Every structure is written in structure tokens, then in C-alpha cells.
Length: 324
Ligand code: SF4
Ligand code: SF4
Image: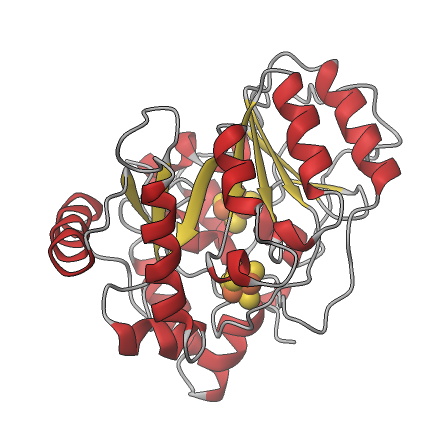
């Protein structure tokens, strides 16, 4: 699978030229990638997830994560991702234990997984535990969603959003937060997040009666499956050049890698989910859950690469939308 060539990495040079560095602050968000198995096989997937993948965080690694989390009051949110995290057989155990530690849980749910065999009660389980749902819907038009996420995905996603609304998500209950994520279909920057959110709210409400809380726009990071498809179309270098030309120094102090720590299915630690996908471990030698005593990292330098131009272009991008 395509990954960026380090020789062409000019992100560090850009930081030096602007007298900037990316240093970690206290960790506030723990992002757990609990497996690469997914019921979908999306064209833009940056973790190369799919039905054929088998990697999955086991119970003992989860138990270790929970011990470390209990010792780390600095962390207020645990963001669970994958793959489709719900397909991990210990997903519900993990959610319940994190909730018992009084931390907010986010489930990055692809919606269609809620209709997989064995997932019949997952939506109500999420509601009972007040888990925030963050889900991808790259367009409110059927053709565009199916193109990026697979045939039949749009209809299932709409039905799932309606079902989540019936449970109180995104509308009636302020504790049941339903956020949508938008990423561009092609090699361009996302449009204005506030304007697009309004457009989504109007279209989804008018056409399908769907409500949600926030829409977050995310820039496609040029790695893995997305980079491979751009390379195939001869657009990869042009896309990276475009990101580089839109470098915005004001995004640096808000980068998500400053206060987020990413843990992989096998317990290794990374600065972010993208570095994890590229297998670029944390600079610290103690870079897995068995070597540390809590999640209090501070002042270590984030390892950056050319892919980081995806987070610093224009108004910036993170797993929680724009940066500025
Ligand atoms: S649903 Fe998410 S994890 Fe699954 S293939 Fe699509 S982008 Fe990847
Ligand atoms: S890809 Fe983004 S979040 Fe990850 S290290 Fe680079 S700038 Fe930070």
C-alpha cells in the first residue's frame, strides 16, 4: 500500500522556516483503535480496514488500557475507532468500563454495522450508556455516498440515522449526541464547515426527517487507500502540493496530536491515528501500554511527516473537524 516517501517530506522544513514545533501538551483525549475489521471497504479508508482484516484488541490489552486510564484523570474523553469498533467482541465490555470511570465515550460508528448480524441491540446499548456517536456521511446525495463507501451504504445509513433519532440521538435528549463527519470525495479541501452543516441540516430534515447535532469537515490525509487511488489517477503529487500551498501556521498550536494519544489494537502508542496507520510510533521509547504507568505524556515532540500537511491546510483538520 502506498505511503509517502520520507525523501519528499518537507513538513519539518516548513516548521523550521516558520520557527514552529509540535510539542505534546497534557493528554485529554485517548483514541483507541480496537481493530481493523470492518463490514465496509471504503475507497478513502486511511486504516485499510475491511471484512478481510482480523486484527482486534484483545481483552487483556483492554484491561491494561483501563488500568492506565483510571490512573490518568487528565483524560476526559475516550474516542473508540476501528475498523468498525462494534465488531470487536469486547466492545460493550470496554464501553461499560470506561463509562464506569466517568469518562465520555465516543463511538466512531459507520451506521451500516448496526444492521450486521449480532448487532441488533448495539444502538440501544449506546443510548443507555450515553455514548456519543460520530459517523461519516460524505454527502446527503445517494450517488456520492455509494461511490465512496460502497453500493447500498446510503439507504442503510439513512435508515440508521432515523433509528438513532427515534432513540433520542441528535434531537430530543441533550446527552445523546450524534455528530456527522464529512470528507471530500476527491482531491480538494472541504468546504466551509458552518455553511455545509446548515446545508446538511436542511436537506436531511426536509428529505428524510433526520436531525443531528454537529457536522465536522475533515481533510483527506494522503496516505493508504486514498493515496493509492490518487496515485493511480496521477493526482497524488498535485494534491500534496495543494495542501502544502495552503499551509496555515495558525493551525499548529491546535493540532489534535498535541492533546490526543492514539493506541492501536495491539497496545502500541502513536501521536495520532494517521501516524498509527503509517506505523510511525511515538518518539518516546516507552511506546506501548505495557511499558507505561499512566497516560500522562507531556513535552515530547510529535513525529511529523509530509502527510501532516493534511492537518494544517486552510482552516486545519482533525478528527473533531476544523481547527480554526
Ligand atoms: S467504515 Fe470507516 S473503517 Fe470501515 S472501511 Fe469505511 S472508512 Fe474504513
Ligand atoms: S497527521 Fe496531523 S495529527 Fe497526526 S501527527 Fe501529523 S499533524 Fe499531528
